[in-house]
Amino acid sequence: MGKARNFPLSSTEVAMVFALIGIFALGLSGVYLSMPAEDYSFLKLPRTLEELKILRDNLESYSSDYTIQVLVSYCMVYIFMQTFMIPGTIFMSLLAGALFGVIRGVALVVFAATAGASSCYFLSYLIGRPLAVSLWPDKLTFFQAQVAKRRQKLLNYMLFLRVTPTLPNTFINFASPIVDVPYHIFFFATLVGLIPAAYVTVRAGIALGELRSLGDLYDFQSIATLFFIGIVSVTPTLLSKNQSEEESNNRSERLIKSN
Image (cartoon, rainbow, N blue to C red; front, side, top):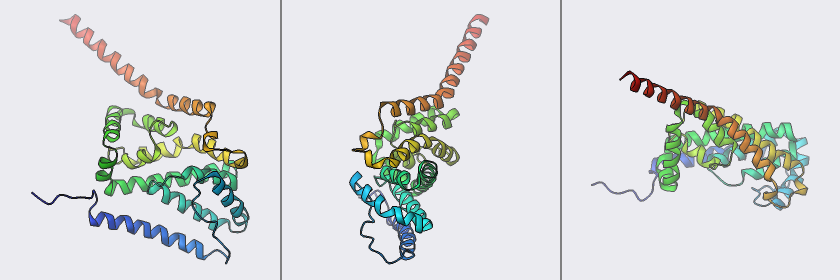
């Protein structure tokens, strides 16, 4: 018997992860060096609404004078967080609304979230299976069964998952290549399915000063709307399933009568 592995990743796979982190670090360093000499002690990932408001207040002037640098930095940080499943992207979505308004904010969030989800997808495709099996064995089995059952209408199912909070987006990003969700379906479902939630969050970012907690983001009406959109997206799958069952029953009845 070979020697058992104590860690789910090999040394080569760990090296690939650190290489990807290095690429992001070099990109962010380049953007940082292109900014004017100022005190940037306020630049850190926000973990509370108060930290987010401080970051917003400091970035408002930079976003008008150094728009390109702010946009590139924002996208790189968002994509990095999505790629490595770092919590806190909801604060980044709020920040987009506070700095850029609804239309540009939604476009920015959907672009960055889709790019980050795609990056996570391909990273997981390369090294994700042992980690996913180690972290979410039951959830992965459930997801794989659902994908296999809905293979014919998989896009509708993936849209439903993206629109509604049925499964965490980080899990969907990481698990999709492992359960054989094709990338083109994953990409389109992500690009379209994230728009409703992005709109809710970005719109809330415009009135950031009125937020008291993250629980204020999604009231009953917002959650009900998201689930309604999700149900609409999955309806063709349900109709197709019922139609197939009806056709199967009709064939069985005809065979019985013919005998």
